[in-house]
Length: 509
Image (cartoon, rainbow, N blue to C red; front, side, top):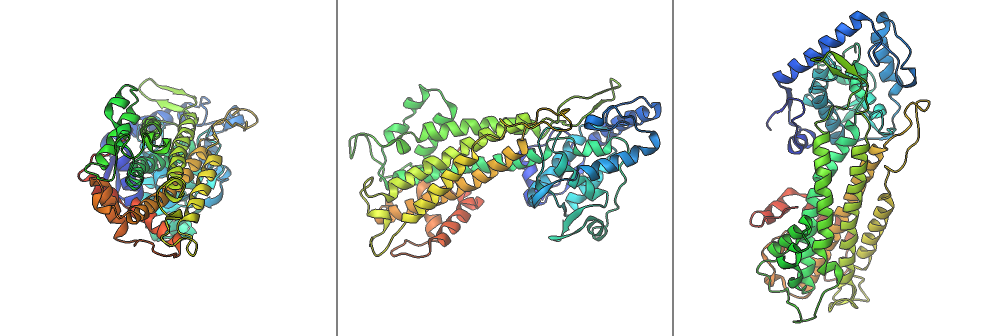
């Protein structure tokens, strides 16, 4: 695995995933080091001069007007981290925490935070030596940054708190010793530089958008398999229809579907079997396309945020000024994550309705619940129940978190974003959507076999069908279905599944 070089402000989503999921190593560029050293020198000049500057020699939040003496500045930073470590709930996953650390390093490396290079190198050591701080998932308002969860990360490089080493949870002091890392004492401004920012919500959100892009491609494939099973009408995907509406996602979805269905002998034309299909087939470009447009918008927001300086106060060494602003406020990510949640919830929603068309004998020419011997066997009856349950749960989770705000810090921080809650909800919705797509894929493969039409499948649907059938046989009689559902989800999530289909077919969002 290549080493990811951090220059500050130039990180992309692909390199982010290499570090978080594939354990790529991380290294600072010389340019980043020089920028951080320059900003740090200016912070030290401020300390020497003694004028009150927020976060350097004052208290925090409502205590911003309390001047701190120079001999207590290091203790100020230590107290900040300890007092702000108020996270609760289950720990965030290893990949999310690695993402938090990477994003914090990238933000600090831009050179507007005034942190020492050696402190940033301690964060990099956590990544490169496989130490994962214990970070509870709940407790952030997403306004003055992700203060509580980021404090749990900062604790570890100080030799405090807890961390995982070799997948074992232990005291951070012990984990650092096993990894041969010396803890560090934070100096002026450094505690605030480590915890003021949106890196928790953004790490969760970056993983979410990466997985959502894949979800949208898989939804086009599962929809195409259902079209095959139901002898869907392809006229509705004609480019002439979509170019006159001029919505990018809609146009691309129609192209995707026709490419996946290319050479199919199962699809039909208008009036061959029926004049038109139900909306869940006919309007796939409009429905999936709108979610694609939403996801592409969110992707742009995330790509900017992973390279943003979200510290406070901000250090501008060239201009010799320090400005206390509000870049830590999570509103851009909060709104984007709520938008992402809604977009992915709709993908599951329409998929479940296609499942209903497959299993309901009143809506197709196939046996009830896709069982060759219905009555004695229930077939896929309850698989649709599970999909409906997931979709209903998603509808509840889709209520936006960003419309809420509860003032904090004695009303100094009187509007908060709830962005981390929005991001966590989006992840849950995406995971549920994957499961619904898996159920549709499983049901459509069963329907294709019932019609004995697998030899007439299109280029893309044939590859998808063969991947499923290589591990999951046709269900002649009832068997334990959760095993098949889980196995199908694992298959479609594996990169081999999508790569094998995209080898000859360009599927874009």
